[in-house]
Image 1: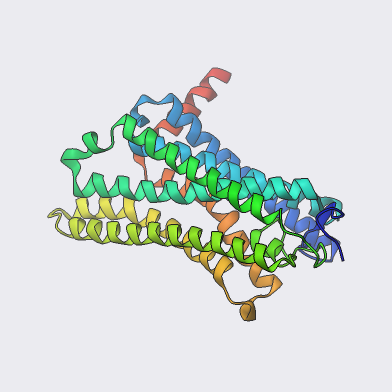
Image 2: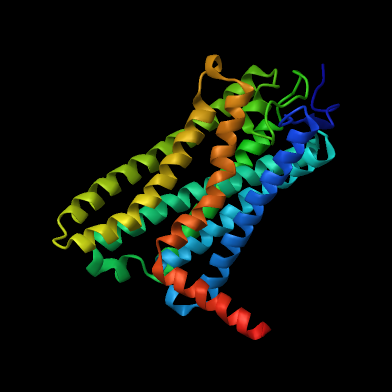
Length: 312
């Protein structure tokens, strides 16, 4: 038995018992993290340097890249360290910090994806009012609201979770400090119910955002189908469908990971779900958005070409 005063570290879930598989996980996570760092770094540089990308979508894409980098840098390095050095420990304060920053970046990312859906809705359904509705001040306010909401949500969840007495051991069945697995160690029924209430509020907000996304895309698809040009419809669909796919993967895996009944829980399923919503989107987001944005591709190509010729 241990409590909040004596607990100094947690035990994370090892990816495998065999040393060869641990090293394989290390190299796999290294490749994913380098891909995410490089791709998001290129987007940040391109949007910052090219004035053609100083648009609402470019601004939101820059913020999305920051959240992607934050998600990757919060969870993956510790998992790589544990796989490389064959250890499973994380300090108590390290776990609290990891939970706080992960919830902060993952919440901000979800709200930014919702805002980007609104951007697509205005661009397609109300193109004549696009500049008026999504001016620079409005974009800054929406992005600030996303970051502030993520910060407040993360602060409340982390403070409440780590104020609970933890008396069910210190083994977390996850490769990073995930909220549901920390709650399983609690023996305070009142504190547990309080945290479940906070999770319920967060789920309601997330569900409200999802309903807004679905409603927006219904309006978007109705507007796209009225476009007389087949090329115009194809361009609109190619812009919106990748965003919808990213949001659907993100929301479905997060919801299932946090709301699934205990009867269907297993270490392998929990691990797969966590990788799907915490590691895969930050690596795929920049690839999906850059491949579908010709201006962004041109800016990245111009930037890389300029760097190459400078070296020459």
